[in-house]
Length: 84
Image 1: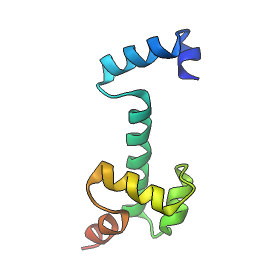
Image 2: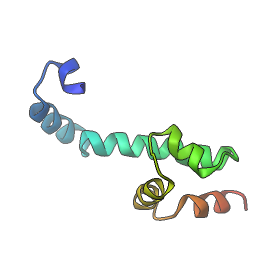
Image 3: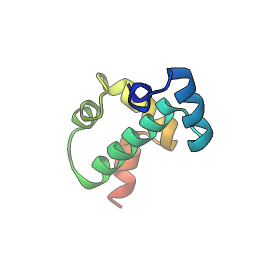
Image 4: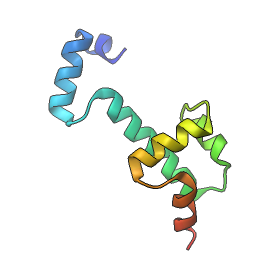
């Protein structure tokens, strides 16, 4: 969709985006979603599953894996560390 808006092929868009941003379009979106999740974990007491669903994850397990890859900590660890 972003390639269409930019009037480019998907390949050209991805290559240009990656060269400018240093990360693939999907990687950028994933980082952005994880930042939203991190903020929600720290600033709210919303259940993990609600946070996961709010950023597009259908399972808590998938959310936990993606979050840990991004921050090297589970969502629960991040939340506990923020309440100290």
